[in-house]
Length: 77
Image (cartoon, rainbow, N blue to C red):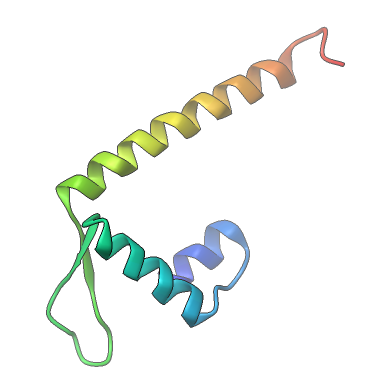
């Protein structure tokens, strides 16, 4: 997760920030822990989490579409 975040956001999260986010996602039942794989703790996206993610992506797509339309508009000020 930390590598993915660094790749798309260009920043590295501190472990405490990431673990806090994971705890919130588990509390919301958007992710669930899988059996430990050595020192790593894998997680799986739940159906509720997939629905929440789809909703957020739809919202973001609307924001992107509006931004692109305004950027390409000939009368932007």
